[in-house]
Image 1: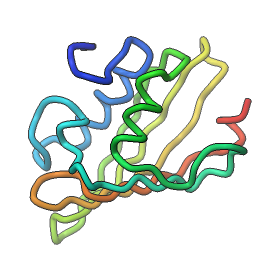
Image 2 (image 1 turned 90 degrees about the horizontal axis):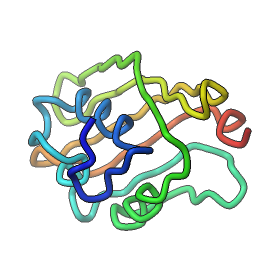
Image 3 (image 1 turned 135 degrees about the horizontal axis):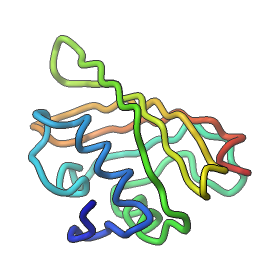
Image 4 (image 1 turned 180 degrees about the horizontal axis):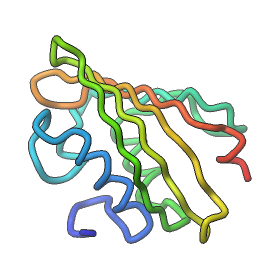
Length: 129
């Protein structure tokens, strides 16, 4: 696990590493944040009080760099659209010594080998525990 990239910490690096594994061959290798277009939009289909429905790259970067719990991630599945402009990633994220276990589905739109749009689905109840 590397924390050498801007925005990567011991708490979130495993999360970014599984995302980059899913994006391999679609975006340049390296940092997740380098793979995101500056004008990208992140949309979250979660229902958590106080959590925004949408964030820019800069907002998501700031939020994630202070993520409070150490994460690990596994069980990655990737489905690529035939037009090579979108992919779907399913993965699991765990934290709090096994007390947090969530499954995510991320739909990623690519433009010029960069992430331009990201829509995320997860279990809101798990996120509020």
